[in-house]
Length: 288
Image 1 (cartoon, rainbow, N blue to C red):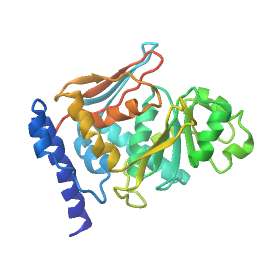
Image 2 (image 1 turned 120 degrees about the vertical axis):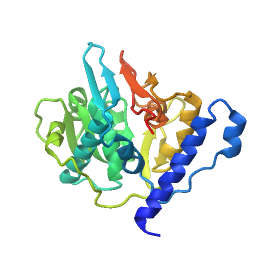
Image 3 (image 1 turned 60 degrees about the horizontal axis):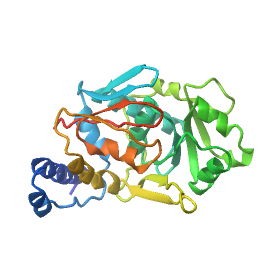
Image 4 (image 1 turned 90 degrees about the horizontal axis):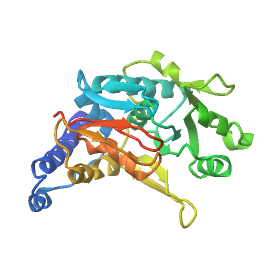
């Protein structure tokens, strides 16, 4: 079987599992009886699923409302294009499959653009709360084996206070921040190619996201999801939330907790973000 037909077969499995859950949303017994976990080898959710849904799709996918009242919107097709540009930009800077990216951002378009881009590239996302600083931040860099940092102006200030050896070998990208020596402006991604083909193919068992637990009772632990376990596992999120085509999902959760990273995989409604200090939002509408 060719690699192209294999990818299509795996996508068909994913779509079939998803469709069954949508059809049996109100019949738990039927959903349990009929559900089969997709068997995946090369599946990449962002390229194989999201890009197919997003191509030419002008429906709203992401709506961010800041506490200040400022609002930003992107359609599916715009998110597809922007994530391709960010992925191309990262590869141009030297990023490769398996590189760890510490993503320390608040409610910003760059958060979701980078998340999609990293999945396409096969880089590993490490979401971090913007409250981190000092020793805690240095600990994340070391134990997370971080190769890239993407953060905003407030975050840049925290990294500049770290000892030089903490950032040795770490590429630094700033979002909406004044020019700082050693940092690359994320805005340059807008000049990158809108077409993206990964230098290396991803496998379903490749890591996709690693996040640190809260550390409430002990030292924070690093938890990993793969290119399969994260999007496929969140088919259960889709079923639990019960969203239908055209619904708007308002997500409200912590900046680096597992909850907010569940939202993009719900795959059901346009996810809208209205932010007081601590919420996040993802994207997607059931359009197919």
